[in-house]
Length: 171
Image (tube, rainbow, N blue to C red):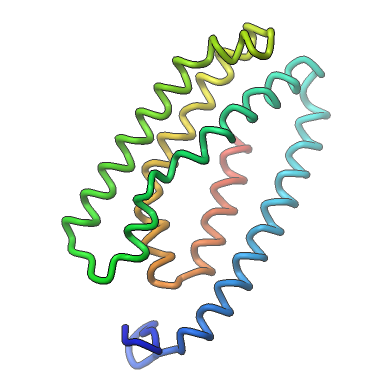
């Protein structure tokens, strides 16, 4: 990589502005895909689940979504913006993110009874405890997604994020 160009393969380079435009395009396409997937899964689950179970999923999703704002832990920004990464930076970031994902999952599971009190439903507690595993997988993926972002591989990143979202709801 040089100041104004990005090397994308042997003998290939693209201007940073072109990669940035491509990044914006894929970011919006990814957001559109996620919105379509969210609406589709909500419609499917509203048909498959009885109203009580659907409500439990909605309550658990609310808590999990709130916790997701803390899941990146600054590691992503460091990996993307640091001018020169060494292998030990990447390794340390991976283990830090993985550990933070485990801590966040444990915290969500520990707070499940509090959420049950807030929502006035003990039935939501085991749903939150299972859905808290999302934080573990998020922690494991932060380093690789940040490195894709750093390399300006926006298409790959967008397609992976959409596929993972769809796979998580399919399971």
